[in-house]
Amino acid sequence: MREVLLALFKLQQIDSRAQEFEQAALKLPERIHELEGVLDKQRVALGAMRNEEDAKRKEQEAAEAQIREEGEKIQKWKRRLQEIRTPREYQALSREVEQLERLSKELEDKVLLLQEEREAIDKAAAEKETELREAEAVAFKEIRELREAQAKLNREATEAKAGREALVASLSKRWVSLYERTRAARDGLAVVPTAGDSCSGCNRVLRPQLMVELRKLDTVHTCPYCSRVVVLDSLTRSENNVEISAST
Image (tube, rainbow, N blue to C red; front, side, top):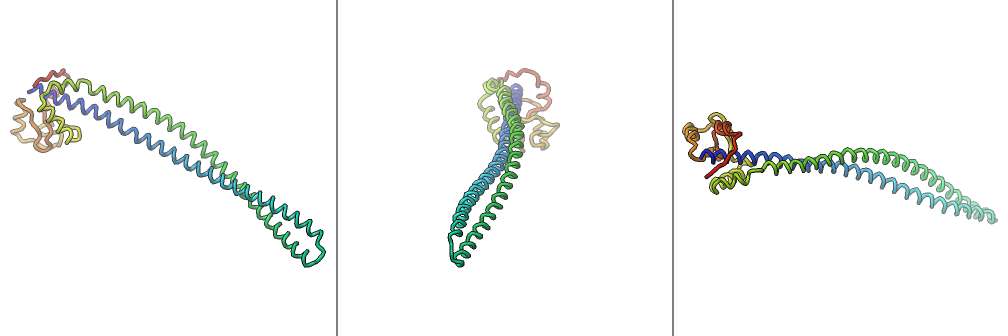
């Protein structure tokens, strides 16, 4: 039974080590997602600036087209003024020309303002694009390193499981079932050593009689509080570096 207890403890060590690598690997995609999210926000902000600049360009082009249209009307009405003979008609047409000239002046001012706004947006967008390229360079480097680290952790998790199948094969189905069931119920921790006269899994003090039974090494005992398999700490220390060949 001593070999069974040591095999269960060794199996727990293997699974715990592999679980550490697997959990560490699972955290890395969160950081990758976070980095990509930051870049996406910057791209959206840059796209919004470019869209705003494009909208103002179209507004400017429309104003410039209207200026040309109004200019043609002004020239037409001015030629018409030279042909008018009645004062009333001349005065009415003159007012029309003045209104068109005022409108043209307002449109020209608008075009100048739009041009200034476009230049300001274009400058800010260029700076934002430079910032984005720099951020992408830094983020892509970190993402590449994170993915390499994730692959390494996954390899280490696989390597950490070396010998697991042999240990499982050396144990009876009864003990393997107990181990797997407890491990699933206790966040991956099914076998723990004692810590003095306490269970190191839940830190509860074990009954004196249970400590006596544990020292006999004649069966597998579980903690009455957390249901984990409890193994004497002195046994795990003395055999920690000894290759285990368990039998049922």
